[in-house]
Length: 507
Image 1 (cartoon, rainbow, N blue to C red):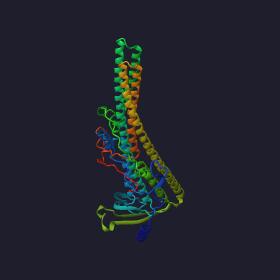
Image 2: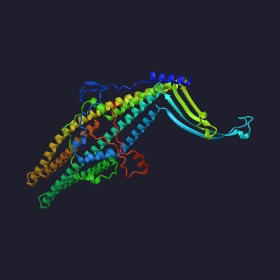
Image 3: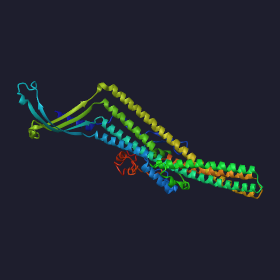
Image 4: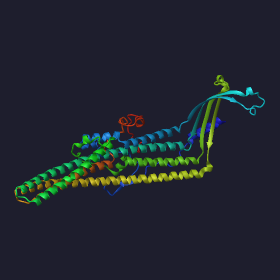
């Protein structure tokens, strides 16, 4: 009878199995058709498209050292190690959830020396109440997932693992962007240092000329004091810029998982600012929503929260379990596996806590609230991504225009300073004209160097907003020569691990 009942329940499960709770549907989000455009278009279940920008961003900037520093950081940065560990954890939990859909099989054995009391065996002599018990068996248990509790749990685990993979990719974009941005700042600071030192040398030459004229009885002490004061002001800029230069070098080293001074010698030699790409195509807002990992992660967490509503809802329905045992029991080890020692059991269990429906509905309400919160977080992530990209586009366009104006100002300032010095040496103008021209030259050249840095940095910020332009690499667990033994054991357990990427169309 039990076998017939079990067979009928299994047949019903195959025919009527369903997963209670809502199915995840990608939220419909109205975004502009183009960046800077007023009209909007719905973005829903569109297929993933190729990004509109050039993925070879580093190669486009034409700086091999920068490419090396970014690749190094993507393999050794400790924030990336943390993101990878979280992804490993989510993947392990997903593997555990998938085992819930399979039967649980265990084996057990027991050997016991038993003495029964006189009350348990009345009339039996004491010596005959002693004996042995031997048993061995294999048991199995399987939850019949009629209402989708297990399947919804696996679905939630899969979405959570996808979110952690997107978080890892987002962290890669952040780390690569920080390295490039700091490197650009470093090269800009080195250019500003060059400008400050060159102007200091020019002003020193002017002071030497004024001093020579004073020694010859032509100049005045007032002119010498003014020239010396301007020289000291210019020289005072150099230590502050040197401090910022050192801070930038330290930051790049730490982003690469190294001690702060590890790259000082390598980066101390001044180099040019990386070249700006000839053109940056931001694509469409729809493309942005499909490729930004923070948005992908937010949607995956919404998916997981939706699936957990089904997990909670399944507790309103009875839970069926199928159990079985096959084994052997005997009073002597030599008889343990004889035919007459065989034991078996097949059981169908039903667990339905219908009297606890209040607690179950409270858990369902909590799961609904979690899903509403994740939906709000997803929509906020979309708005923030659009805002970040629009701002990056505006800043990049304006800094390019500012760059052009200040380039002309720097050229004219240098020409004016040379002409003022020539006129002063010829006696056609006073020292005040020279000092004023040199001050304007310093300001214009320093402003141009700073604007040039902002211009390249704005391109980096735009690529960062578009979440692309860098290779996808995982932290390299072999880069742990200086780690503690415990850290090495934990991080070297899976060498050669590759980064996992995910898109909402490959669930």
